Length: 385
Ligand code: AMP
Image (cartoon, rainbow, N blue to C red):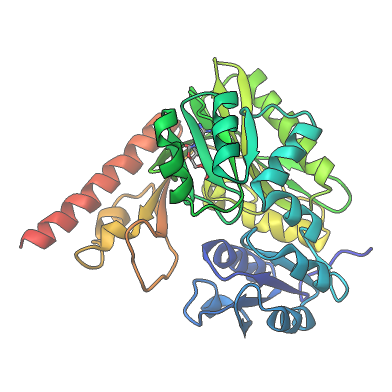
C-alpha cells in the first residue's frame, strides 16, 4: 500500500496533549488533522483543521471522523476496541483494534506478555474477594490491586500490605474485574519508546529514566543511566512486544529495573507517551513526528538524541493561586516551556512540561528542578502578597 503523503488527513480520536503535539508535527509536515473530542476547548482542537464533536466512544461521531480522514489513530488506548473494529471497514486504523483490545484490559495485556515470554511481575486475575485472597497469598505481600479497565496514572489501584486490608482494597476499586501483582522493589523505572511502521521497520529512542509522584510520571531523563546490556535487553523486550502485536505507530513500554540488570515489564502504551515528551525538541525526530510517519506508512525518521535531556511535568497544583510566573522559565535560556492550553487547572492535571537540554543529563535535571523551585516560590510569594 502506498504511503500517505503531506496533504492527507490524519484523524485522531482524543483531543488531549498527545493529540496536540501530534497535530503540531503533522501540520508542520503539511498533513491535515481532524480531531474527535467532546470538548471544543481540548488542547488539540484549536490547532486542528477539523473538529468532530463527540465522546470517544461515540460510534457515529467516529464514523464522521473516518469520513474526513485517510488514516485514524488515537491519543489514548481507552477507546473501545469494538468501535475501532467498525472503523476498520471504512478507513486505515493505526494502531489496530486488535492492539487496543490486547492492551486496554490489564488481564489480557498480562496474559499476552506471558504468551510472548516477556518477564513481568508475578500476577493473577481477580474477579471477587475470594479470588483476591487466594491471588494475594500466591503473589505475596505487599501486592498491588489494579482495576482491569481504564486505570492509568495510579487510578483504580491499591497497594495492599497485609491480609487484613484485602476486603477494604476490594471495595475501594469498586469491585469490577482486576488483577493483583507483586509489589516490585525496583532500582528504578525506565521506558523504551519505539516506532514501528507497516513495513515492520522499528526504531528505538534511548532508554528513558522516569520518576513518579503519587503513581504519576513527574520527571524523565534521557538517556537513562543504565549499562549498554540493560538498554539492549529493553530494546529486545519492546521489539518482541511490538512485533507480536503487529503494532503500527509509537509505543512505550514501561519497565522496572531490578537487581541492577533484570527488566520486568510494567505496562504497554500503544501511542506517544509522556516519557517521550523530551523527544519534542531534543531528538532529531520527535515521537509525535515518528507517530505521524508510522501511521502514514512512511519510512521512520532518525530518533537520535544529540544531547541529553530532562523533562519535568507541570501539574495543575502550580496554578492554585493563579497563572504561574512564566518569566521564571523563560529567563533560563536552556529551558523550554511547553503548555497544553488547558483552561481548567485541576490539582494533579498535566498542564505542560519543562524541558532542558544539556551536555550532562544530571545537570539538565538539576536545572529543571531549580526552575520548578523558582516557579513554586514565585507562586507562594504571589499568594502571600
Ligand atoms: P501504572 O499505572 O500501572 O503504570 O502504575 C503507575 C506507577 O505506580 C508505576 O509507574 C509505579 O511507580 C507504581 N507501581 C505500579 N505497579 C507497581 C508494582 N507492581 N510494584 C511497584 N510499583 C508499582
